[in-house]
Image 1 (cartoon, rainbow, N blue to C red):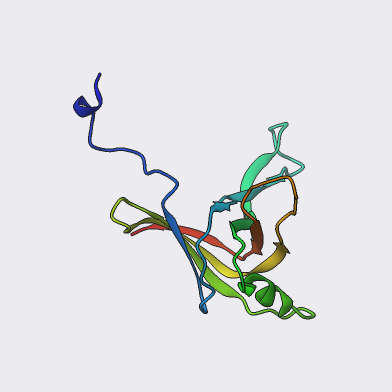
Image 2 (cartoon, rainbow, N blue to C red):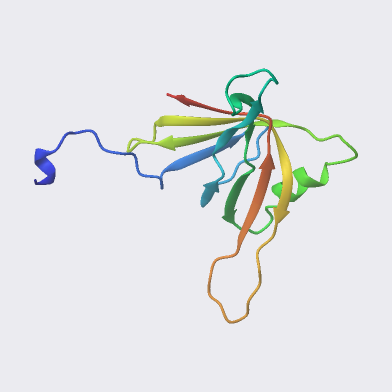
Length: 150
């Protein structure tokens, strides 16, 4: 079957996205990963149960750390500045939105990280025999991941 005979519903490509960090940290990112969440499973069995197995119930929800990667630019140290604000149990937590865009640049799906803060900042590796672009990464811990459609 040729492409023109198929439905007009196509999956969104993953290469057109935008990230907004509350408070003005602005950067264009090359890659975002870790947009997943899961639920702990609690197992329980009371002693007089006629079943010789446990029952399973959903427990606490938890999200993975989210990694943002971007090119290293002259004078741009915003990741490191945010990370350096961490002191004993204090850090400015921010809302982070990751938006998957359509061909018009409009948001289709939005992932929102609640109370995100930098867990790790990694500068680029250096290699004198490579012509790769310098890429740094920021790993964010957060307290919740919500997905919505625009």
